[in-house]
Image (tube, rainbow, N blue to C red; front, side):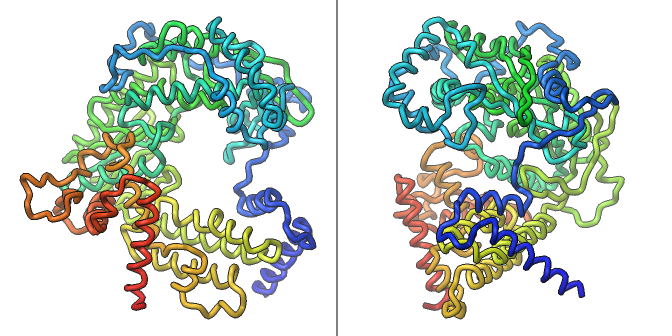
Length: 631
């Protein structure tokens, strides 16, 4: 009976979706298809129609919801400001160690080609903000408008002012996905900026970002927004450090710290002081002061719009400049931590260290939590006690509960210790087996393949292949080089699911008996193992060849062999193989990466062109695949 009900439910849902997609059309709208599939997997982000709101235990009338939210988003007086004078900020802490203090970033006139490039980057799907020019219009008539826009932007630069009209933002409350919908804190204020402001900010962002990356101003602990530092580099760095410490028989503890209203609490005066320490000219500082001051926001819900409210602190979520300014603001956090290593990813922070016995480990982490609280007091930031967690990592299978308690506190409130934690969409467990993450990933992969199979009749072949790539394969491929190292079993499971996906969704009936490697060749895909190898080698290549900002992050573990001292190595571009005391920790990323890199043919190792490295690497995989299958 249950199976019959499930089958009936699937058919009814399929019929409903078929009607929405208008199967009679040869090519249904791709955007409609994506919206529908995202709704099915609960990934769609919709502006919530807020019917009820409660503030201070008082229900807000529906006609007053916009005004109440605007006051809530703009009024930060209830949060503490900087407690120590900003003059005491140490410039040597905020700047990168490699920064040349004689180099100054000045504000120079904008060229028409910069405006043209910024207009090209505009998305047609984005809103035009408050009573502004739509992006489509700006793109269509950019040839006629470039001269006027260039003159407007250069006038602002000459006066060192940001136009007041470009400082008005329309706020759309976006539900965070958790928490009561009647609570204003459950909504994220997303700013819809004027189109001209987006173009101007894009140009300023491009110049500032280029300057910061050229002079390596961001500390090595910063990931996320700085160039080449992604979620994968963040997790790879953290887990590699943990495994190295465990291999040396050390206990490892970590605190996963979340800042409360991080973007909204940025102190403008402190930010300007830190910008000055980054060698920005006086004129550019005046420009940024004007950019931050007297910003106005209005909340929009449906046809209702609140009045305008002035922001006295914070950077807007939705602006291209805000993530960069926030990175500058928190760049000096590592200098405040004296006992632990740390990794920053946007407003998330991991502080971790190793020690033995556990008492020393607990003391080191607790001291730096106190130091971090001190930094927050100086800079007007807050730690979210509810979202901050801690974890103890061990390689010992049998340990008592009393022997692994960290007992950390923030302001006398205990920090919850967990045995698994979801960090940047990867589930970490205390033994680093990734079993829970693997189970969740496989389950999600199967779920999305089934969803696509149910509705495949509504799409053409090109769309189906796109959805298989972007919707299904993106699930196991995310951080594949991390979570599959602990067990090859899950990698083989992914291959079986991929094989089933190709046969049931993409193949005609006559093709369903083709072997796995034949189907891979037909659709141009790699096996899960090949994809993992490709991700690892690409990571090493970016580190060693392209000299990206990752170079300083992994330079202590990815080291080329010194052939003057080591004549046993025949290939000139091999890496030094790290030594581990245990076979368990040889499963870590760095050990696997070095071995795979050293197995590469010399001509691929020496390739200086990234695109050539990609094509040569894939050809090498395919050659190995043929030999593995005995072809």
